[in-house]
Length: 379
Image (cartoon, rainbow, N blue to C red; front, top):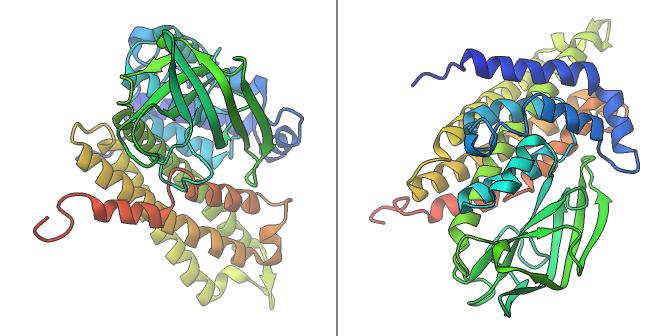
């Protein structure tokens, strides 16, 4: 298999990197994080101008029909630059819309950069299990009434519309009976409590109190949303793997530079063999994570759901192990400075930690990998 990126893919990534280096440098990012909004409308407009919001959207809705491999390059650059804009939340929401079909007008707005999305999927009692849903969607006339609470909705307060999972039938932990809805963020009965997370991103607790929804807000079939939810979550996990690789790339580079410039006993500490061994181990973890992230990007669109789940879970688990090792080693090699707000290393470590806990941590995905058919002998 040819793993060489095309000229167009590389040009896309290079354009994004130039913008990050020029206009989204570390100090500029810190100002955005500590602003009242926590995001930058100017940065979002630039992402749209560069074609990033249109990239994953189908051509029929004004996009470029970009593949997961195309998105891998974008997410690596966003991870390298620690970009805190609601890009991942929006493109994940767009994937729900694409998989469900219909809602072309919303996808056109996403492509043009005029609509931001967020995915309200997790609940307090659920842990990493997205099928554990207490939020209820009750038939109400020709539509539905939505009631419940969603936790840690990434960029929930910055979105114009929310993709919401709710239970319209079955037991609380059944995969059957799950329905998906697109809910305007300003709909009566929607409450949003916004806050900043440890990695500088924004998240929200979103409550739904008797929210009236028309039948047209349903994504896919009533009670048949699990397959879409499962596939979209795998797509999101794949993008997170790519972002983690970009963040680890940057963290490895700043750590290497620190070892070259920090002196002890009259020599750069990078000359000490024990520290060279640590950097070599970090490099091995990074390259293994890079390979698995690419494999996931290739396989996430597979028509074979078992293969998709197996590869994505293997990638998320391996990347999770790698980011933990690379992050912890980088902090230790920086010494006390590694956890200070003044150094990018601390911010990369925090973002990597958040990525590990989003859409399933390493332990969760190891268990999911084991549970797939064919893992155990005779299965």
